[in-house]
View 1 (cartoon, rainbow, N blue to C red):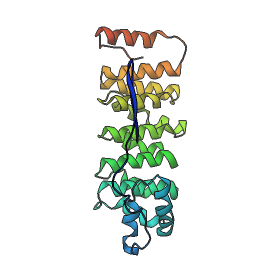
View 2 (view 1 turned 180 degrees about the horizontal axis):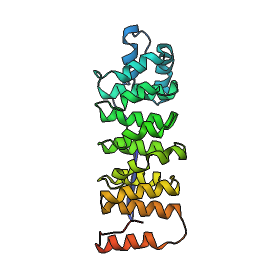
View 3 (view 1 turned 45 degrees about the vertical axis):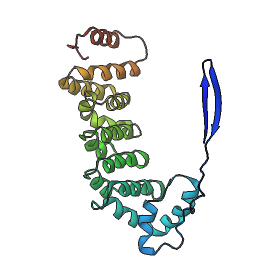
View 4 (view 1 turned 135 degrees about the vertical axis):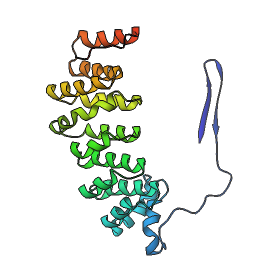
Length: 241
């Protein structure tokens, strides 16, 4: 590890940090009993690195889709191996089937629900299947579902326009930002439906609504400017158009 310090008139230095102990034994799945292969793959260290992939990818292909599908659905497992099972299903086996996605979408673990949304966004972003995840009580799940909607067909996103309202006025700024990005993909009619639903949730929704309006119509418009000036002046009784 190389560390550079200094700058702005101070003395600069570069330090090299090395381990003093000998290297530990390299990660391998050779010799692992068949019954332990699945957990070993799910717990592989640094699974996205080439040296780790060289070990777990052939074993994952050998184990097949069903082994990881069962792991993803197993509520007795901790969240981490279930999340990893969803990732492997997404990368190596084309994603979650409809039945599995429906069950993992209501898992007790928020991490599992969030990774389900992530997986749907990368394989088959079905707006109606993402609908419940968009309205999830966990902000991270909401954000993942909203980002997945960015990959869905525009016509299907229109079907969940009203479901965006709670996210637009929610307490998490990243959720509001993601919801605003989804608004830019709605048809004019669906945008108006989303705005009408959002206005019922409070003045906070006016900001992401105005941001999406400005993005949808990049010319200069009085509406976003008016919303911004009212918010900055403390006049939260903003009329949403």
